[in-house]
Image (tube, rainbow, N blue to C red; front, side, top):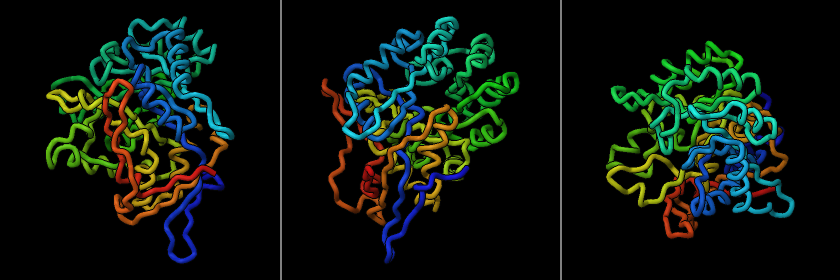
Amino acid sequence: MELGTEARTQAAAVGGPPSLEIARPDDWHVHLRDDEMLAAVAPITAATFRYALVMPNLVPPIATAAAAADYRQRILDVVGPPSEGREPFVPIMTAYLSPELDIGDLRRGAEAGIWRAVKYYPAGATTNSEHGGSSLPACGAVLDALCEMGLPLLVHAESTDPTIDIFDRERAFLDAELAPVADAWPELAVTVEHVSTRAGVEFVADHPQVRGSITPHHLRCDRSDLVANGLRPDLYCKPIINSADDREALVAAATSGSPDWFLGTDSAPHPTSHKYTDRAKPGIFNAPFALPVVAEVFHRAGALAHLEAFVSLNGCGHYGYPPSGEKLRLTRVAEGCGSTGEPIPDSVVTADGQQVIIFGVDEARCWRIEWL
């Protein structure tokens, strides 16, 4: 893939820090929640990202066009208008694929421009997935309709079989459920969401109609970060952060420049009251510092020249949107993360007093972001 003309790493005249200019990034997988949490986190996503593919797992789920239109308006209301000279933030709505999904309503919503994708959750796999399906191949009527309408299928690829080790559940789902669907519906565009394993990377490579999103936390961490020095509930997510070998495969895929891969933060805020408990909720809130986390991963991989493709171009190509006309400059300002001493917030607080911990504080100290 040809990189944008402004996506170039630069060196200062005498050994200065790396710097690059990229098109404004997009987030192709984000949870904005609702009510007070929505008001707290949606403006943070909108401050960086131009498009945001919004997940539908509210309570109740977003499964009708009317519900999606109402939710979209609530998002826009809390974000507000853009600053002068800035492109507007655009939430892109997804439909929750449940057994009750009305194909006629789905079709009307697509024709009205309300929907842009349909999301499949295995029932019970993650937060608010209780209305999901028990078998993806059994959703044949919906899959036929998606092919006819040209809507992509987004998949939370994680088996819920309790006999399967949690670290093997992505592979199990891909083999048992998504592989038969990819074979039976080769014209169906599919995104494997938040790929977390080498098996997921290989699955995308083996299926031409399938793309993959990758999160900042799966690029940045492995399971030793989660459990080696005491359990860290702020790093607990679904799919779970996996092995060092899996992380290595994800970094290689993301930094390759291949159009198969793009950023989906899976930013998923939960208050500390739901994280620091005997049954922590899965989800990592990374929206404030997702871009510096990813930039640091690419920097350490020697692949900053491919950063724009991953965060600003490839997702647009897959979902049929033009890249942003806005530009920003990232400059690395510290050789050791966390060494600048700049005040960086480590949490946000909702209007009703709920604290949410932010992922990526150290990387935020390493990178300066300037709008051009």
